[in-house]
Amino acid sequence: MSDNWWTDYQQNKRLRGLQDDLYAVSASLASAKSSQRRLNAELSKVRGSLEQRLNRLSAAFDAFVEISDLRVTLGLFDAQGRIRHHARQLLEGVGPDGEVSDVDGYWLAPALVALRVAVDGVADTDSLDLAKARDAHRAAVFHVLGTGLLGGRGTVTAAMLSEALPMPAATMSRYQRAVWTLAADGFFGEAGWELVRRRGTEFVRALPDGDRAAAAETFRAVGTVRKMVAPVPRDFEGVENLGSALSAAARLSAMRAWVEEGLAGYTNEPALEVEPDIRTVVELLIDEGSPVEQPLLARERELRVVIEGGSEPPAWDGSAGETIALLRKDADDAEHPGRRAAAVRISGDLVLAAAERLAATARADAPYRVRARTRHGQLTVTPDGPEEGSLAQLRSRIDAGAQVSGHRRMAVGVALGVAVVFLVLAVVAGWGWLVVALAAPIVAAVQWRADVRDRRDAAASAAARHGSLAKDVEQRVAALVECRTQLEDQQPKIDEDLKALREALA
Image 1 (cartoon, one colour):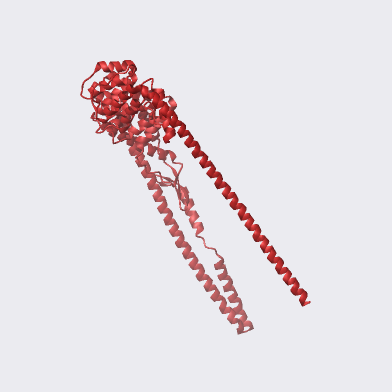
Image 2 (cartoon, rainbow, N blue to C red):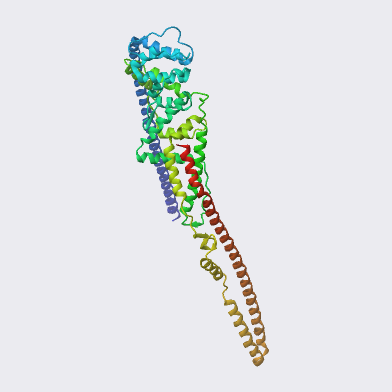
């Protein structure tokens, strides 16, 4: 029997070992398959990355071959290239030396001649007229921006400045933004600043009603963004109009201060520095090339992007941003007072529309009765104090919460009754009952003392809650009085602020 048992034990042990080995092999196979899947995934990524690199290299090689062919073609336009080289030298302040050779049909050659002498204060009207005859718009923009950078702004006529700065559309072009910035910063005197104001006003007045309302809200936000208004206490309910009126009155005063500060900054003196973007626009205009070169140069820029990566450089007449957004930026630009004053003046109609809405909101009547939350419940308060009915309800609730159960006094009565019964039994049946008769009064005394303590604690708690309620009520009444007083003090200034805004922006 023992031998069979030992044999069975050995067989079972070997079976368990084989089962463990089987589990180990299965786990190893699963791990191997998992590793294989991860390796395949990594190889797939590598193949994809290599393919992308090959595609990138192939595209760059094709672009390089094409750009080499383009350069051969562009070599036929050496004269135009020399003109552009002279123009860049002039911007850098190192020339050009000697005469600038003219090229038929290319506006830049005579425009460069006119700009070179304009720097010295000489108006070469013949060269400028020739440049305008070939391309009036580009010639005007080049001369205006060039004199803004290098000097000789006295050679810029009102007509030329007006040609370079038409009324902007919803999106302002880069050259318009450059001319706008120069004129608003005072580089073309009062006439240039006034042209910016007039163009901007025309743009604002041409806005559709929906866009006009949104723009008015934009300038309201700019003019009042720094005004912090104390909120109405959160314990008040149904006083949204009061909070809106307080905020509107304060923001109206802030808008008036913003307008007056912005307009006062204009001194009709040019800014100390020219914006770097202006030079960039002039360089882009120069690099555009002559009419016959423009398709070739544009394709060359595209191929350079393919070879060097990055994004295509912007065009001189490309978008500089939404006009309203640029006006808002200028209106909040304290570092350029001329630009800021122009933007404030341009937005006059929008500011007045926003001010009228603020005034209408600020004229709301302050509520006399307000529902207020306290730590003990809600009640109605007025500037004269709480309403007695709602206050009495809270007081009754506090008193009801301070009531002490009468079960302890009932226990005292029962204990005293038991004491009397057992005292009678002690007299009649034997003095052994006297022990029970004496224990009952002790129980009654303990219950009585506990009842007295509970009632004293409840009274103290009720007194504290009444005191807390009185403090809460006093605070709520004071807060309501303060809000009403603040609004009543601000409302008489509404018409004064509106009048001041209308006069300032007239």
